[in-house]
Image (cartoon, rainbow, N blue to C red):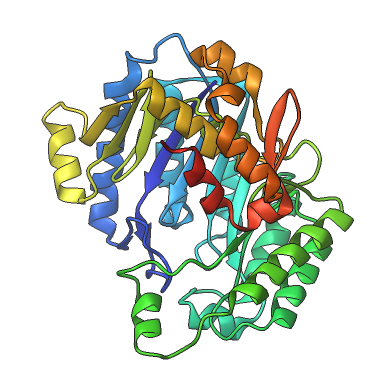
Length: 376
């Protein structure tokens, strides 16, 4: 499989929890950036000629900040430079407050068949506190418009363990969203990242974080409630109706190839991981000199590939198959990790049989602690 990720780094304003590479909207900068993206596509055109792209993901930032003409320009260039499979999954991230019915129509015309809408909470006071620019009512209006236009595959992003959020608030968020009947729900626990406004507010004691037990209670309620309404948990933070799992994310978790375009975008091609320059000026300058805007790249060793396949594979509820490791790496997983497997199984953190290994619910709750066991 082959994926394509394109980063659109512009936002109306930065959310207080966000540590992604994003910039406040500048109209001139946006035009320059899209022209640079066009040239970057041309730099990769020959490298992947003859290969079909299975999944496309336009992320950010806020991709829905683009105008209708800019959306058309972006997708025209994608189609001019790459061969796209007829049934490719094509996702664009959207934020309420930047989405209009006309933009949705243009996205549909351009071949977008999956939307990922950032909501985070249904209570307006929580949205305001974390720096979202929209209300729940604006989200619901956009969601209904998208359904009316014909989008059947829609993900909604939610976040729990927010500042001042009670468990009852989270339950209300889940119940309201399930009533809307989206095909996919992503539910993440808040992670405070350094150099974000929310982190600084926490350092100033403006709010307290939820205790770990409450965080786990909210996670377990999420799994059970969504399962009872037809949403299968297929990855630590992702839930989907049957057949609506995000193919682009699965491509990441299965360590498949993908091209990453745009400032700060990462990619993985032919055993090499790379990351693009973050600063817009430097990114654009390098591209216009005819070079790829890569800040660093690393050819992965067999050891690197094995370890990545383990901790990315274990994110998925299906876990990892021993046969895959034998075929890909000539690696006897059970023999090499015998001690780690025995220890984790005794602690009831993994479930194992002769074919595969996966995390238990207890293991998913402390997944990072399990992952490090397999890094030698």
